[in-house]
Structure formats: structure tokens, C-alpha cells
Image (cartoon, rainbow, N blue to C red; front, top):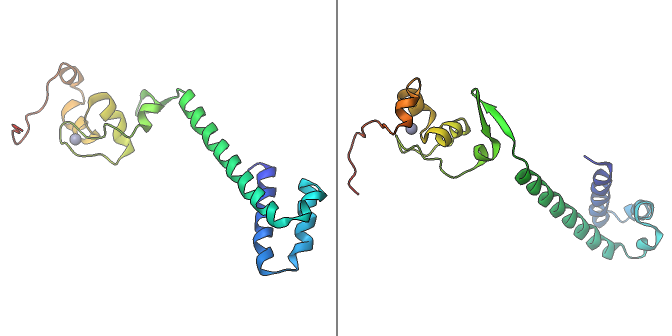
Length: 148
Ligand SMILES: [Zn+2]
């Protein structure tokens, strides 16, 4: 955590204590003066709003930056020996196995769903060692035919 943020947090907790214990004010004023200059001490209430707002802005900036970074980064991660786009792994869509039609909550299934359109269990049962057959379009017979 950057030192500035830690300092800010300390200031916030000092401000929170201020409401309960008026003796904290001199300490608080000193802290504010050190960080923001003496003139801000005049109106700690106003300052409290500024801190909150500033924190909110900083937080938003960090979040946006993080999102932007994630988007720009096309990271390849290795899963079970396959190299796959990390973005695909994190994608929340297409999580339904086309064979057993179950929604997968297991991130370990992502690779199989993305690559073979089926969960890991079905991969082991139907695809493993027979990938060529699978990729040419062969699928196991469904237990119940669905005409809908
Ligand atoms: Zn399945």
C-alpha cells in the first residue's frame, strides 16, 4: 500500500474518533496541518468532506486504471499444459457445457468450455485422446432427444 494512502486512512480514523472524543481535535489539526497546510485546519468539517471526496476520486481512478490495464493486457496463462488467453478464462459467458448442459461454477472448466464447448468431466469422458473426432463435429448421443 502506498504511504500516502496509509496516511490518508490514518487521517480518516482520526476524523472518525473526533466525533466521540473532542480531545482528539488538537492531534487531528496537527495531522491535517502537516499534510495539507495550516489553512485547512480552520474548518475541519469542510475538510472532512474534501477528504471523503478525494478518497472517492482516488478510488475511482484506481479502479478505472485497473480495468484499463486488464483490458490492454492480453496475457497468456498456462492451464493444464494449454496456453490460453487470460481474458477468455475470466470471461463469465459461455459456461454451459454443450454435452451435459450443466452450468459450470468451476474455473478449471473454463479451458475445456472455451476450447471444446464442454466441461472437464465431459472432456475426459468424450474428448480426451479423441480430440480429432470431437473437432470434426462428433457429439455423444443425448439421453433424451429434445425437439424443442
Ligand atoms: Zn459436461
